[in-house]
Length: 247
Image (cartoon, rainbow, N blue to C red; front, side, top):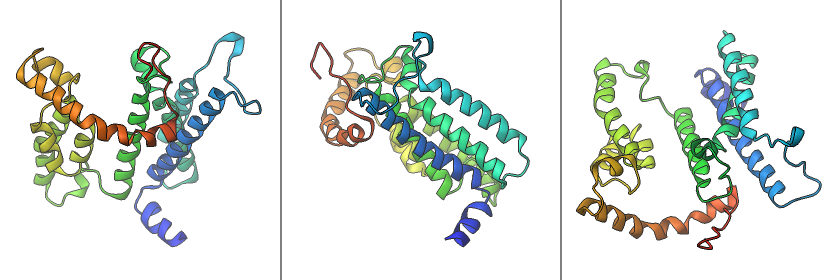
């Protein structure tokens, strides 16, 4: 096991990425466990940090960890040293705490346990997927991975624009997979945008054929998505019910 780690992680120059990845996952699961224990009002679990009556969200601690880990990582010269691993771990832990409250930053209000707050969980899953793909594969935007620089140029000119279009169309997973496999980016860029996405708001007129078709497609795929929502509830906890709809 130690030989594999040395060869696949340390010698490959992925020690910092590995430490970031592990610390990010552990940090996310720990903070979700903590907030769920606080929500359940478990007596023996420490509660919220409220000095002077001010609720300090864990995003504040995450920013501190990211600053310390980021600056520390820049100061360390040896990427394979223990200090580099510690800095990367701190950065990963901080990133987990920050992204876990991504929806709060986006909406500038406490939507942590609302349906809007589930955006934070999706962003965390995307970050885990991106980091995991980078850990087990190559970076599609690293010119050192291409024997012929033409391949790198083609990725920048062809793959990247389609990936960006996928993200603007609200097709996050197509965009994510398209970074590594061009066909996913191409399919996502060609298909209709999701309703409410920046692309749909800018290009689909209300009541237009494309807008109605986009909403119909979203409704058609809503049930399979709801069937897998139990995984998000299991990991992150069920969101609060809306007082208006009961959902």
